Length: 227
Image (cartoon, rainbow, N blue to C red; front, side, top):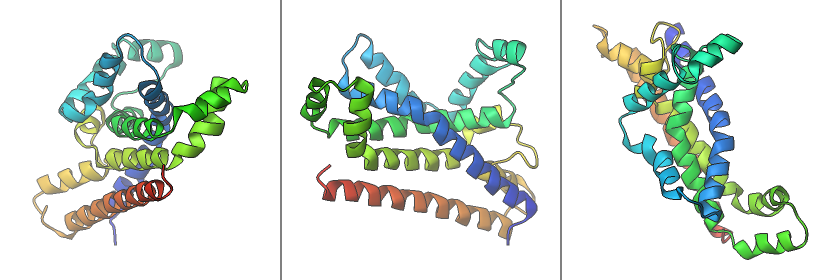
């Protein structure tokens, strides 16, 4: 039922969103744990930077990636000169933009889940000689996994729906558009009210609705088990 361009948009969206989740997972878990369990100077600034992508226009996030990872950017230039890797105007930049947009949702979910764990259980494991990473792996993680998975699902859904930041750092040409970019391209087309646009809109609603349903089931399970 989908045209080649629509299949390409769906495939690229799923690939980029999955990659965005994998990119966001390590910093998301680390930041969620730090904000939930540690007090340190500048914590409020870290919190502000984490939540910033949720409140600024997405094009600002995209512009920030351009500044950092462009050919003459602070990080982009050494990556290009030393490793021959270019980030912006490529699928890698789009994946990074999607990860940056979904990271706050992951951090928030992980932080909330960890704050719901009795810290005395972690302290007891530490007094038994467990290293911090073993305390997290053997005690904290089994208790917070529904919240972690819910955060990953929300991060995935946010990455699927990302438009502004990926538009700034992506090529936006045939075969290089995500679902939101393809929807916008079809809206701008003379026949934008055709069936192709409706199919893509329904597909986006289906993906987002499924992600939200999974998230809700995980959070409900967590509440039923007293987590």
